[in-house]
Image 1 (cartoon, protein in one colour):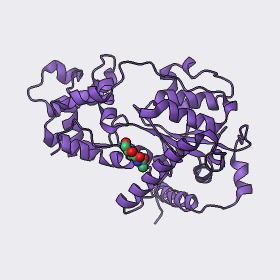
Image 2 (image 1 turned 90 degrees about the horizontal axis):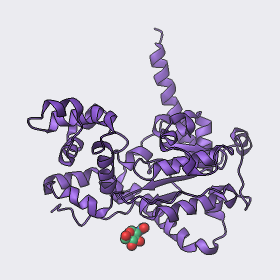
Image 3 (image 1 turned 180 degrees about the vertical axis):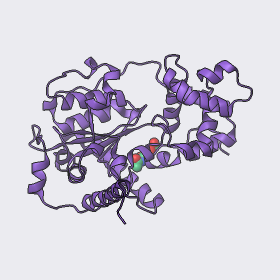
Image 4 (image 1 turned 180 degrees about the horizontal axis):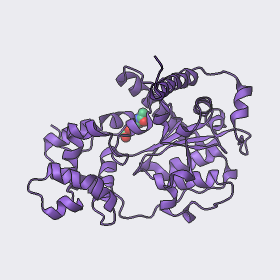
Length: 340
Ligand SMILES: *[C@@H]1O[C@H](CO)[C@@H](O)[C@H](O)[C@H]1NC(C)=O
């Protein structure tokens, strides 16, 4: 009996993902062949790639910063070893959030609501071959146009493996519930976000509000934070489809237990961590990370207010939903939560 096209494609995909894992863990295969894959090889002032600069660079003034990042990597490893029993295989689809810079040798896993617009802008400057000088000259919506940046999922298996081994892999994370409130405020409390209101708001109101008005059912424009929380905790939600990337856990977006990130940046120390990465790239890159002046940014006090109306029962369940992100990235349980 002949295999259908669909069956053959499934088989090819399975084989592909197996290869991906096999090669990723097999450290030195054939460097000469691999060099041909590279479009260009960046060696900054020091004559090193960013990855080499991180692990073999001069320690000079950065020693305390180096130590901080080493501690973050160690903790990540420890938590991964402790909590993930079965290693899942990576598939190219898991790599959709990894933005590639082939000029300098960088892989950035973007997490929405964690300065990702600014980091995408910087990646566009780094890969733009002179098209842009200043990240802020790139309009925010332009930074999110998929075709402006390449993601690792678009590459062939050998190209993916090469990049996973030789590029500096980094990620930026944020206190999980603060990120969640930031996502809620941005997507459900701004009148211009009609796409989210239609796509998610109408569903949330239909399922989680008693006696909704016809207007609310139609527009989905006035979702309350409690209703959003019920939606996240409703088992049906994730059975239907994965969470939207704005509230999906970093653990599920960036697979930090399979992809070993070299630098874990934090939103709480955004400028410092971003400059650290840009220094590893090399001063020649001449790119400045945009400094933020936003005063409407979601902070801890603001986050606490949103949780005043959530019962301890739901607070506990919500914390558990994001628990892996708390553990992996060393965030402590917020003092405003009443989980006991
Ligand atoms: C975790 O965070 C605490 C307090 O915020 C800090 O003292 C500690 O050094 C951190 N641990 C790691 C491994 O980064």
